[in-house]
Length: 370
Image (tube, rainbow, N blue to C red; front, side):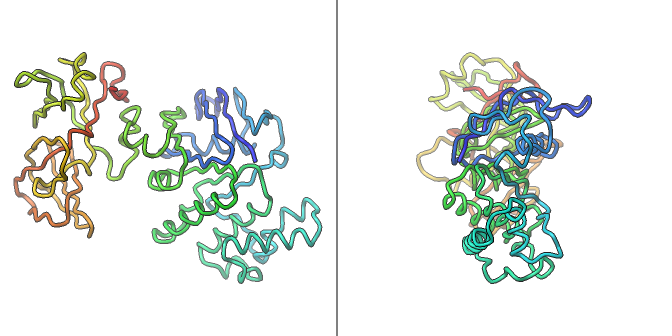
């Protein structure tokens, strides 16, 4: 097994910069997820590690060895692609065994490895079938099995669940997480789906425009995002953002927008005092907005009036949308709520979980105020 390190890694495609001074240390046996929107550099980072792209500057290490000039086949990694990349004319067994045959392993060893991987993945009855005879989920298991049999130091996954339907994606997420615990190997996983990242990762690296925005545990990213981009990317539906100013109100500090004024909780006053009079971004997650009738105890709430634009019944919750000017916002409220479209209602914000972002530092992606 092995750790993986990116040291000041840059990747350029002509004038396009795909990775900008990337620094990540991935621990042995960790499950790290690289996440971000399309074009953020996450797949490029994976391909640089696999040796499928050359690093423009910096170093990539597997364990203690710099692998910049090491051939992909000698890096002791195994990669699972989005497209499965199975040989259609070969059986499942032969697809899984192909790499081992190239390495000229004994037939008995190949048979043992393939059958063991098939048992782990629950595809032992499919070994004689061809890929065309398999479902999408079964094909993905075969692709994962082909990686397992190599017994690599590091597993790389490049959006492996993108071609599966929603129900099967949930099932495969669970299976890959279970596989990680069983194999106790380093997993590096690329996805644009933040739900996948949150549910599977030991830690998550959030990228945007080739720049690492934050590297932390899923819960820490959710509770304490480093900046507005991370706050808006992690969480579904996304965090609501409002242009605001911190001003004095009724003898204390308040968040003032064009639509509401919210008193700052006492435990935040010391942190926010130096920003009085400054423009900020106020952020609140949809799950921190409640119907006042069903507010949990022990939280600091502030009332806000809204006009219901759309409601979506989700079964265990209701999404309530409203509009201020040209901007749309959303709350996740108790399913017992009976709001009507066009109705003016009062909701309450959980101010204990509010976020503020400092516009004076960066107007495009302001950092969180801590």
